[in-house]
Image 1: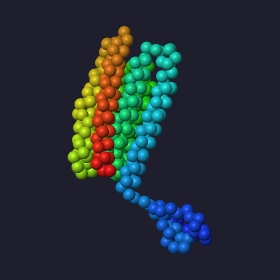
Image 2: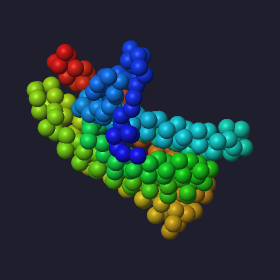
Image 3: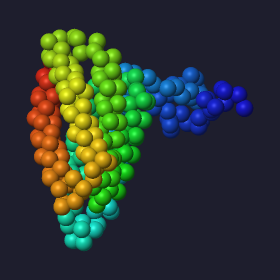
Image 4: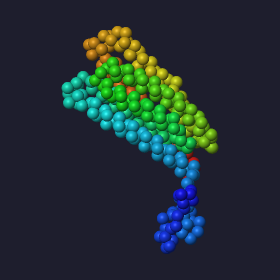
Length: 258
C-alpha cells in the first residue's frame, strides 16, 4: 500500500457529508481528502503546556495517593508520634505542586524539552519513595537528601531553559520585567535555597551515620523534622507571594498584547 493510500481516500459521493474540517485537512478535488499536520507556534506552545500540566497532575496525584496509604499507621493512631513526618511530606507535595505550576505558566513553551520531563519523573520517584519512610526517621532524612540533590539538577536544567527563552521576553518593558522575575527567582533557588536544603539534610544524615543516638534516641529527631516543617511552611508562604507577583507580571503582559 503506497503512502498516497494512507493519506488520501475517496469520500462519500455526497461531499456535503464531510469528515474533513480545516485546518486539519484539505480537499484536493471531488471527494479527495488529504490530511496534513498543523504546526503553528501557538498550537505547539499550548501542547507543551498541556503536557506539562498533565505530567504535574499525574506525578503529584500519585504522590498524594501513596502518602495516604503510607500514612495509615499514623492516621489510625498506632504511630502517632510520626505526625510531623506526615506534615512534612504533605508540605513537600504542596511546594512541589505550586512551584511546578509557577514554572509551567512562566517559561514552558515550544520547543518541548524532554530532559526536563524526565528529570520531573526522577524527582517524583524519589519523592514517592521517601513517603515509604515517614515512620523511619533515618530513611526519611536519607531520601530527603537525595530528593533535594536531584531537585537541584532539575532546577539547574530549568535555569538553562529559562535563559534559552530570553529573547522571547525582550519585546517591551513589561516582558523584560517578567523575565527578570523568572530568572532571579530561579537563581535564588539554585544558588541559595536548594544548596541550603542539601547541606541541612547532609549534616543530619552524617550525624545519623556516625552517631545515630544523638538524633534517633530520646525522640530528638522530632526537633529536626520540626525544623524541616518550619522551613517548608516558610518556603510555601514565599512561593505564594512569588506566585502573586508572577501572576501580576503575566497579566500586565497580556494587557499589553491585547
